[in-house]
Amino acid sequence: MQKPSIPKGTRDFSPEEMAKRNYIFDTIREVYHLYGYQQIETPAMENLSTLMGKYGEEGDKLLFKILNSGDCFAGISPDELTEMSPTKFAAKACEKGLRYDLTVPFARYVTQHRGDLFFPFKRYQIQPVWRADRPQKGRYREFYQCDADVVGSDSLLNEVELVQIMDEVFRRFGIRVCIKMNNRKILTGIAEIIGAADKIVDITVAIDKLDKIGLDNVNAELRERGLSDEAIERLRPVILLGGTNREKISALKEILSASEVGLKGIEELEFILDKVEPLALRANLELDLTLARGLNYYTGAIFEVKALDVQIGSITGGGRYDNLTGVFGLQGVSGVGISFGADRIYDVLNQLDLYPQEASRTTQLLFVNFGSAETDYLLPIIAQIRAAGIRTELFPESGKLKKQMSYANVKRVPYVALVGATEMEAGLINLKEMSTGEQTQVSVDELIARLR
Image 1 (tube, one colour):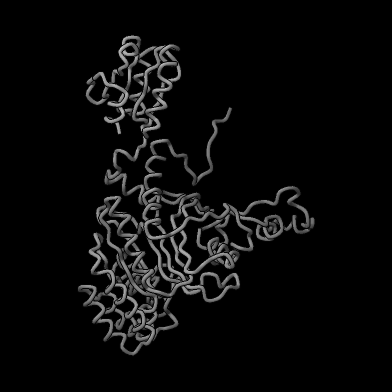
Image 2: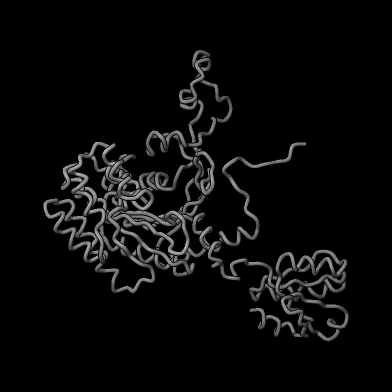
């Protein structure tokens, strides 16, 4: 018989891995609640009409499409079948698809429920998404996103709050990070003043690679993309702008003095910095003019978080967008949001060994099973201990003590309780601490006080 397997690009998670993942999700969820964000969920599958055309041509190819139930060949002619065109077949045989991200379903949700929502609307979502991508190290076909967005408000105080949220989440994780910040309007202004406004996407795609390929290769790529040597030379001092955030802003005001949109971007960044600086963030906040992030999507501030002690890509990102729901006919709904990369955060916490011991949520106390009389005596006591919030098990079968102790070791249970005839008569529990082997006789109340 063939051994069962799972689809490529998906994963099973063991109890230990799930405990770590839940620690990540719970930490992010708690911080979102702290700032007034409320949780929603949307279905795993959406109508394809909702998803298609929202991610560009490449994105459309990466959508997992679901065959219509029943006769999926209904409405497809024999000629169309013999043509063997996957695109045409899918257009008629598939009405639904698995969600590609949480943003488009959220836009659909806001449009569909706008009569029931009070703006500004602060929502978060922690759910899996699916992409028919080529699986490789660190890239999966099924993975989780942890998004928070506030829509229906133009206030930059929302950006300030999101910076605080990113800082607080990574403070709780114990990960040292740099929060990088830029503004889409500044990038547009830069393209304008070097005389290449029509090349804004080409410019940002190239300079986004500065850390990876270096300035000479960036310049070579800019030439390939049709920028003149003069434009490249005028761009150089902007890309290499150094100093503090305030020094960069001061220099930018001069460089972009002729660009109205560029100066507006500087004004927005200054507002965020003015409000954030007195808050004493733990993270470094850095103005990075090479930060671009999905340029066609964002319209204002953009953010990206890098871990300082581990070589890995960005572990959080986000920014301001002006027309989330426009694709569904609801115009002018501005929003700003961030998304934590749970899988990358998981890797960082593993590499730095930063999971707290209590994150495992394992059983705290195991009662050894000596037989039916002992079981009848223990069940009410175990109920009392669980009511006190202590995670407790009774081994289900009476049998060899060695097997029961091995079970405790495998599950890393810190305490084992042994209650036989002598302990029952005395009304005490023989409590063994597994790490030291030390045994003490305690009452139920003493046991609860010690383990809680």
